[in-house]
Length: 242
Image 1 (cartoon, rainbow, N blue to C red):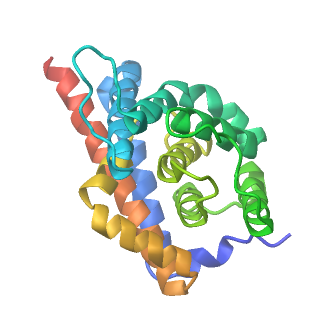
Image 2: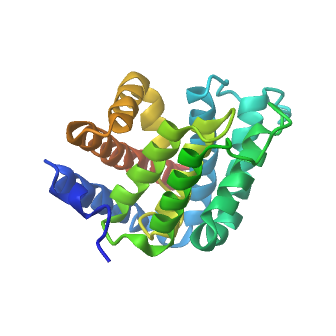
Image 3: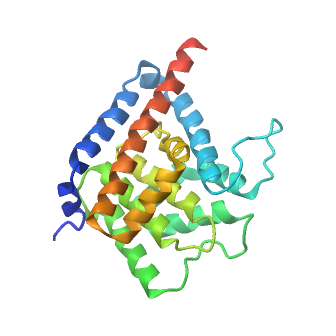
């Protein structure tokens, strides 16, 4: 069968960007702190990712000292962060089930209509296609798969609310499940927040379906993965001096 994502590798700069992203994330896993103490980096990365993702959805980034989060967007993003590791296996075998669970976690305080995508033939077909890619339907480099999952869920917006939080969580799961970032050390969500205008523009470009738009989005995602690796390195470096 023809790999549906294979043509993306021929877009200008994409193959090199994907390779650079893979190398950056690999080097973070080789950091001396992360060879044994990776769990500390992963825990901090997970919280930073949740806060950044919530902010991109209009929520706050600050977690009260009491630990009691009242904002529904941030609360949902943090619930996902806590549950994400346990959902990776489901994502690999039944991605639509995992997406439904992500939405339940993200939107529990926002709506009663949780876990059910919009009833639409287009939504159903595109989610099925995405599921086939996640479960082995492509052999392109992992950063490209991450970009497609992220961009497709942002553009499709299959749920009524919290689509951005779900899309970023699905991208994070894809990074873990493909072996790109198996321990979840990177924090590309922070780069997306810092470059939010560019993030939004690239997402719109991807949704257009043009070759230029696809390349723009994939290059953005690859650069955010590199920036996320730098964020992870800063977490690990701080552990050396603490």
